[in-house]
Image 1: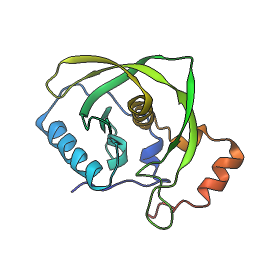
Image 2: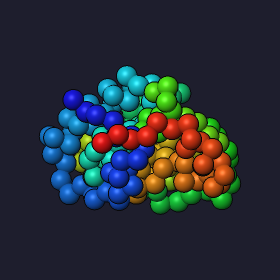
Image 3: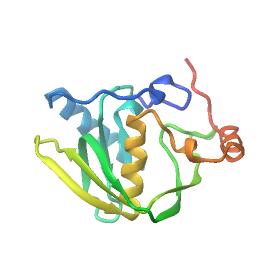
Length: 167
């Protein structure tokens, strides 16, 4: 059973390695991640959030409920136009056990390339919420959290609410 890594765990701050081969283990882990994401009412989950330092993630377009299983995703283009949206993270929880949220400025649209679960190369332009989700999740693969986009004062205020990782 997969276990969510929480803010403070160094695995969340580590850059992930590319997947060299799509194995049955990777595919079954992605299936479990989709189940976990849904159970926790999330819209995305990246491998380091479950302690795996490999470049893969799952995400869902909340409008269409389309699930993407992305292996080695790479954002190749970002729009100059930005937008502010509220973000939370299943790895950044408050003392009540629920995600904490903050407004984050990100590009409004992106073009992303990835390999799907069948080994096929994919490319999509995403905007709105899907663009937000793929940026948030690919950040996890580079050891970055949404709180890193906040001003120092705002980040400090938010982190006071965050339940600390316990060894």
